[in-house]
Length: 192
View (cartoon, rainbow, N blue to C red):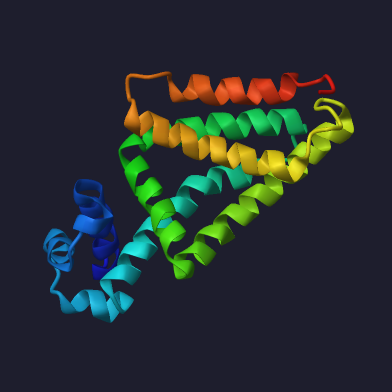
């Protein structure tokens, strides 16, 4: 691995252990086995290093969902596959959930990073909305369902499930929560 990759891994490890506010340049470079100047050389600043590490995590978590949404399967199967894939990814990388949530916090506080996060989310929301429109057109979801608002709601629910799972690990299982939400959407066949 390169020094750049070592710094990215070390930044994720340091944020995981100490949080965003507690991650120092010395801790990161110590973890990476690099000198302090390596951060400036490869990233320009510690903040830019941490942002790249965290947003790389964000993009990595969303990538499987984007790939599944592009499949040619019927839209209801794609939606359920996305829920399943995100649940599997969450289970596989449960320890990195704090990194994901830290990336969202960073984006909420800083316009530079908000644009980066919104770029990832815009692609996901757009593809989810297209899938929901297909479900509406096919009659699997009622016509009163707003595809764009529901896509944003799905993203919000996924973020909420991640936060809930970190705050209350002994609470309801993330797979059960995600599955219940997907089933509610597909079962909503009546007009309000």
